[in-house]
Amino acid sequence: MTVPIHKDHTELTEDQFNTLSEEVLKAKSLSYSPYSKFRVGCTILTASNEFISGANIENASYGASICAERTTISKAILSGHTTFKVIAISSDQEDDFISPCGICRQVIREFAKDVPVYMFKSSGEFIKVYMNDLLPLSFGPENLLGE
Ligand SMILES: [Zn+2]
Image (tube, rainbow, N blue to C red; front, side, top):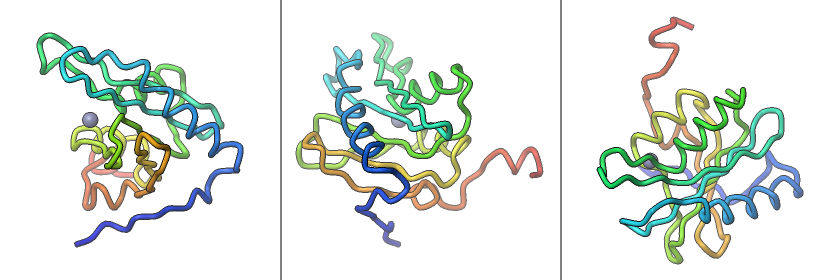
């Protein structure tokens, strides 16, 4: 099965797209990653059109490290935002688009079942993939809440 990859940003205005690109490339600078030196930034555009950014935070006890997507979602939730328009991620990779890990896909899915995920290269080039394609047949709130 191939995952549908999109290259448009039709759910965003031109200004929103420009801000999203700038913010997500900047968000990497928030990273605390002394061990891997693999900086990842994340920017969420909330349903109320606010940009919220975060980054990966590592720990000397490696298993306690947390990815950029999860720090940013936590920041958004704690700021009162539970619905998102888009999620964008960036890294220092020049040749590859950064993609969310399995744990982050599940956490994104909790709040945004079919949100577009923008994956950037360090150059600013991006692709867009929908969550439902990144995590098909997923388990989520409606399985427990019966919605
Ligand atoms: Zn992750």
